[in-house]
Length: 255
Ligand SMILES: C[S@@+](CC[C@H](N)C(=O)[O-])C[C@H]1O[C@@H](n2cnc3c(N)ncnc32)[C@H](O)[C@@H]1O
Image 1 (tube, protein in one colour):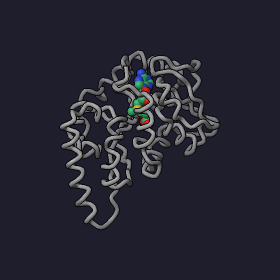
Image 2 (cartoon, protein in one colour):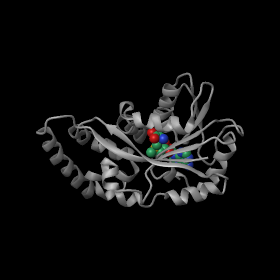
Image 3 (spheres, helix red, strand yellow):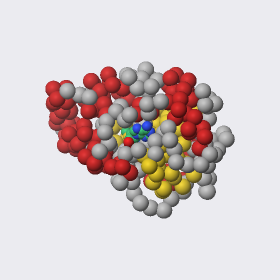
């Protein structure tokens, strides 16, 4: 059961404000290349593909064929229709692909939505070719200083309490070990947002509709966060220089 309902409103909001801008993903490109070793003719499954931002990115960066598997019809409707991306209704526990048919699996901020991690691990094992990796882009509890690792937490610190309920690295590795996976890598990867704080402030209500930790905030917590952000945006406007912000999100690789 997903933590929020990705209905038409949430899907449109996600498309509008939650896709990570491509120009801030350079470090991801290099990290993914190291573990996936992409080559022409390879295919990957993007599980919980959402609005297809990463499916398009994998196709553009590496020329890979991507199966974008997504349970929400509203999110699927936002995935760009283009050669190289096949959009499929499905979920981590039921992937509509044949056995041993893909060279890698990608799950970006999806783990905490999966109700049965062991069942998902077995299903992912089934569709991967032997030795192929599964790559998670994920916030894990207990890794580093959350308040500084994801920039949203700085303005809306109460979002940390929900992230603390998400699967840990250890729980994830344990669930996937039952399907024969072993840890191959774990590293925080920086990603950069170049939108100004004033722009983020203007998007905050839309952002809240599309983000499961933000949805758990009470109205009071949300308004307090917006006020913090408003003050910071005012200060930033008086400071010369670019206003980019960097988050550190973990890449966990199992094989
Ligand atoms: C936070 S969004 C991430 C979307 C995309 N991966 C990205 O990073 O842009 C989480 C997505 O996981 C999907 N989802 C929810 N439950 C799922 C499940 N059991 N298996 C696969 N995906 C699921 C949701 O519908 C939603 O599109």
